[in-house]
Picture 1 (cartoon, protein in one colour):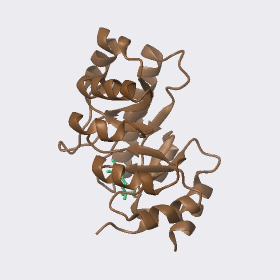
Picture 2 (cartoon, protein in one colour):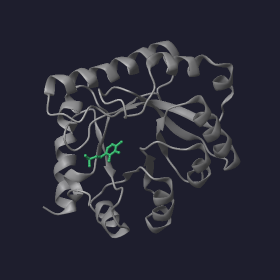
Picture 3 (cartoon, rainbow, N blue to C red):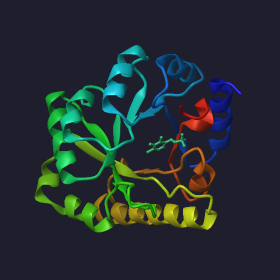
Picture 4 (spheres, rainbow, N blue to C red):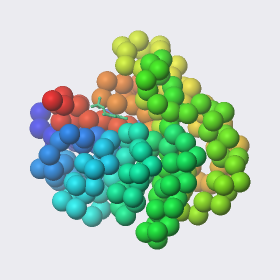
Length: 222
Ligand SMILES: *Cc1c(COP(=O)(O)O)cnc(C)c1O
């Protein structure tokens, strides 16, 4: 199946669900991104700032670029002029840096709080208590150039459906909790980014609004 076929199939699968597609384009050359774009994809996820910044000028301007990997504060500057959403907020310090560079560019950058939901310790993300501490801080209240639009998580790499469901339910419960406690009157706080090539169907059935799919579209990364 071609890239276009895969995107059409995924979009057909997602039609009528709560979820939309973020095409994970990391490691792939811009020609393949253009193929995905021509098949209708507009949300692209990359995990390396330099790679994203190099690809961005080579694709049409209406691509929504999402950063989906851990972001060092000294790389924010590279992305601030164009990035649509940073899905990997794992500290107040990172949020502060994004706010600063977004302001310098006269922009508001969407951000998702990344939660640690997997069993693997090496996967990053905050605990609920850590996220609440950031959201309660005086500093956060002052930020004018970041907009919190939801939560993101990476589940354990496993075939165990019960385990995956439990992790997706956990992320959803974090979302609901933060929504009630901090964003009750903010319709922009709406996204639960969960589900990848191997587990997106389960994630959608547990309420994902944004699935991040790479290898099911482009084949495995070398
Ligand atoms: C690479 C990556 C994906 C996509 O993974 P596939 O299994 O290729 O679909 C999704 N989310 C994150 C955070 C990733 O790093």
